[in-house]
Image (cartoon, rainbow, N blue to C red):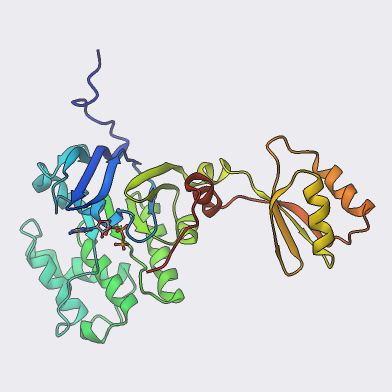
Amino acid sequence: MAQPSTAQPPADVVIETRGLTKQYRGTLAVDGLDLRVPRGSVFGFLGPNGSGKTTTIRMLMGLIAPTAGSARVLGSPMPRAGRSVLPRVGALIEGPALYGFLSGRDNLLRYDSADPTADPRTRKARVAGALDRVGLSAAAGKRAKAYSLGMKQRLGLAAALLQPRELLVLDEPTNGLDPQGMREIRGLVRELAADGTTVFLSSHLLDEIEQVCTHAAVMARGRLITQGPVAELAAGTRGRLAVTGPDPAQAARVLAVHGVTGLTTDGQRVTGDLPADPPDLAEINAALVAAGVRVRGFGLERASLEDAFVALTGEGFDVAG
Ligand SMILES: Nc1ncnc2c1ncn2[C@@H]1O[C@H](COP(=O)(O)OP(=O)(O)OP(=O)(O)O)[C@@H](O)[C@H]1O
């Protein structure tokens, strides 16, 4: 009989946890997590603040020990195999540690010289390559303390990219950035993924995950709610019917008669959930017209990851914090 607890995970999975748990005094920060991150994915680790994302990442990187359960990263158990695994992983956790009085370039030279496997003869070229990669070549001579938050994040990414990596682990890489900075980081993540690096990134921003990730896991209160390809997660949730026009109150009445529930009106727009056995949309449209409701827009909206989250947890996605 197969023994799943000792079997090697398949090579197409770069992170696999089983029952991973972290208990702090009085807080179950991570509760029996079974995570599978496919190689080549941009994997979004999504959850509201305090849902256990950072604690999970810290266990994956061997920074803290789990209370129970196990984690394998690039096929080897963590934290036991940290010495062989971590050089193959680039990590950006809780903001990069930088020397403000050193230039961006000197910060990277320092990082590189701290790596015993890095050949000093090719150091300059490696640092220049990493700066170029994150778009910091022009600002390389500036002191890091003069960098914007986005530039600091990019410098942290450059440090993680000094060596070729199979896996990048980024904890809230766009946290605190302005929209432009967020776009830059997202663009970089896409480029890295296109080059074949698996990227695991945590975020409390749903639309960010939808924009950049191929796969996602959704956390709430230390537990995994769901995981899989982003398109499938959202597709598992029914979309909402939306009717736009100058008669929203009448529209809502007609929709209610046809079994549409959870009706909400926002200005001229009424949205609601179709019943489990939905009537033909053409019938609903005809009923609106027959009732004299003026309709400008009518259609089914694609479900978002947010809809999926709300459907799965019964809670709103609270992004406070
Ligand atoms: N060192 C610690 N000691 C005690 N409790 C902790 C510790 N670290 C985290 N926690 C608690 O564990 C829970 C999960 O925290 P964690 O930081 O992993 O969440 P998160 O999803 O990463 O949120 P955030 O984005 O705010 O960091 C929280 O209730 C937090 O207060």
